[in-house]
Length: 267
Ligand SMILES: [Zn+2]
Image (cartoon, rainbow, N blue to C red; front, side, top):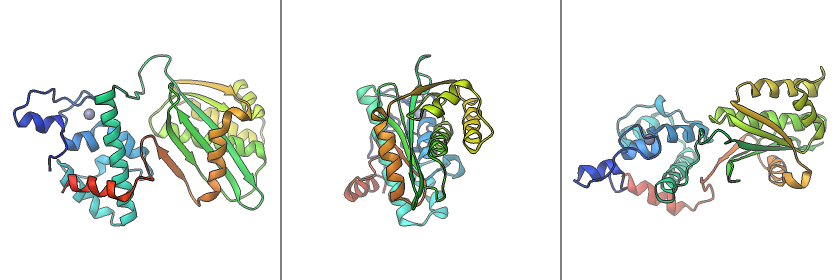
């Protein structure tokens, strides 16, 4: 079981190590804590496409907890994604321990994430909102796209994209944001803090309502050329039928043998 060198198990074998989890500072760093039950890991699990609530399942070890999850989830594709995200949690922990890189919600008072959004509109495919959230270093934290059938005006689509990306960001536990769009009309109404009683205005009011949940919130306008990532995500929406959310350092394209290696570590 303890092939992975979590500090708790090394200390059990007599090595002098700081056994407190380096990410949360709250608990002894067992493998189970490190990958699953740490508050930092929990947030990633919830934010992941699996929307996994760690505490919903029982177990005091990784193995017990997995057994509990298996009762609810039998689909192999679900488990492939599970191992992929687990790998991401592991990489994230190592980035912090070995390189001192950590993305923390409350790192400093000026700290905020930047959300860029854009929307693709097609007469045949519907509406494709796309959004990307980057930290102060410019690294992507979350990206998402979604596809709606139906027809809306371009400005409504732009507002829908921002509402979607902001909701995902807030649900993920991030609440210091700068909202950036290439739609000047949307930007102007957000800055004014009110909107007309139109379809567009209703969505703008939704966004303003969501911003009440932000600790820090600002608005920014960017020319289309500066909004490429969100633009590409919006276009990508039409490749899928439903919501997609990607986390940093979760290599979804990672080859299967790496997954198999991870599974071996825990057997
Ligand atoms: Zn922890």
